[in-house]
Image (spheres, rainbow, N blue to C red):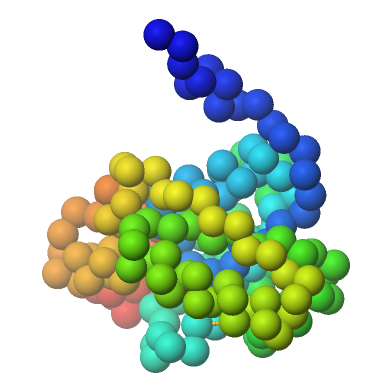
Length: 175
Ligand code: PNS
């Protein structure tokens, strides 16, 4: 039977994209999306932004950025940045017109669809492209990782080891 599996490393040169998120903390699902985007686009800027609907954060922006840098250190076309403001302004300032968002399931799609349309209504130059999450990570979220970690559960299916260590330090030693 014909299979496309061995073609998964073919890189289609397209452009510079932003992968925005709150990354509090970065998960294995985020890292999978970053790797796949870095395989398709020339340059991927991972930008940490504030999600105003999330009331409190576990990690500072600097710590989140360091966790991301460690997670993508082998990907030469990925950079980590942060911005305190609107995503559309960050995109305009950096001359980027493509956003990437990972979509896990239907509920994600509905909210992501609205966010894409909202951003585009304010900034018509901006296109959002969705990457479907790998089934291995379809249940993975930062908030679930934090909840499991706060009760001492194994979170190795959610985050890389270096992130799990920092979460445990933060949650149990209040560092
Ligand atoms: O990882 P998240 O929390 O789903 O990411 C959401 C995020 C940070 C990309 C979104 O809340 C955002 O773009 N925040 C910056 C402020 C902004 O532009 N708001 C308008 C679009 S919701």
